[in-house]
Image 1 (cartoon, rainbow, N blue to C red):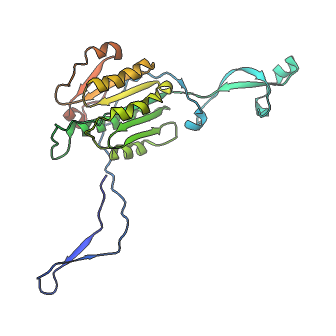
Image 2: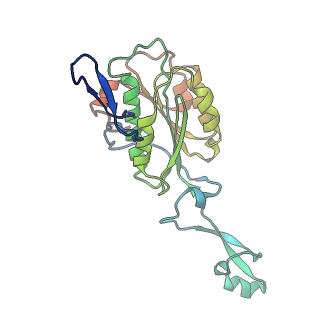
Image 3: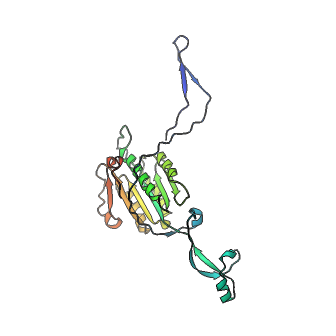
Length: 272
């Protein structure tokens, strides 16, 4: 995100002894968003099981939905007359309505790691690992948005970003706008992101982690998702060896995949 300053004009008229600055009328300028560069994935293996979503009709679009019939119950005040089961009414001699369940959806969370230690010195173009992680997150979100899934995006930097898209509630382009605004942070963000993610885990089918390293704080966040019964996929974007071995974690969380930033930048990651 680039904030464009108002234009200024300078003049040395008439004797080139002094330089005067001239400003036009002050106007509010809109920031320029440079969306992250990403390469579409050909395949992404993410296990998703429909989970109960409280207020699902409000949280997700009903386009294309076919509510599931789950049984009958006695008519109550406020029930829609369209749900009355006339055959059951004739058989039982009391008004009976049909019950439907329409609040089960495939819910996937994508967590972007933005934590970079202060010891890391940025290059002229920034931090390659972080930029590659943002690109990989965009590729993952692009793949997930092709199906009818609810997608929650979490990123903790100077601010906590929580964004929901999918099922016609928001568009993939909106998520790219968020990714364009997310910056790296030097303070530990997991103390902020963990409580926000924990509230959603009971309704989440799978969690995709895009990490920049592996240590105790990231392991705690991953274990929280696994203990909640969520399927997890872990991708680490790093050019150097990780701070802590993840061999033990692969035993209870599944296979980890590590990518170099140049591999992602060149678009060589096609299947995950």
